[in-house]
Image 1: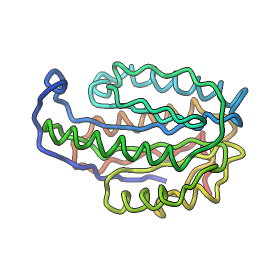
Image 2 (image 1 turned 135 degrees about the horizontal axis):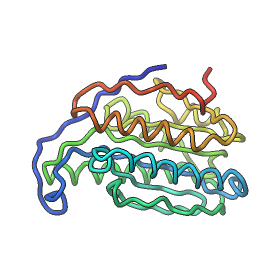
Image 3 (image 1 turned 180 degrees about the vertical axis):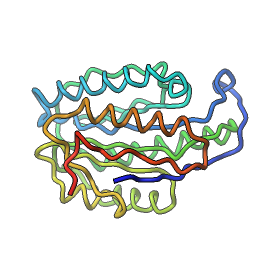
Length: 227
């Protein structure tokens, strides 16, 4: 599976905190399930995966300038706004709470909307944002509105939404939340490190392109169950 994604472009320039780094930005929101069902080895492996993500990005100077990362955690909802990859440090996650997935997705969509507004105000080019959801459960809140927003935003090329189900995830609901053109993927075992290596390579590929280019995304071999 190779997917080409077209990216948006706004006028280039710089102001405020963008003055020192006027590079185009590649924003990525990690929407991470930290509910109690992730307790034990799953949350430990997810923490290892996040550290791998950081290490892999460190190896690419251009990605460090262009990739921005935000986080939405859910058991309890916790939102961390965008930071440049050079400054981002992976959180240490602990498992607790239920699975308010709908609220978490909505929080991610708002982070993306606000960040794109900020880019526009400051004349910064940007690639289409990625929203990357990882969960092992089923939503414990209303998720239908979030799903509608995901479908509409994808149709309008406002962002690219990816969903990954860990063992035990409600794949039927994830399919309804995911855009029709991109089905959710099931994680092989607890291959979080392989997943985040793939994500880092994808971010590097995007950051090496020009806004407006179509970028081939590598197939998720090694960490995902396909078909």
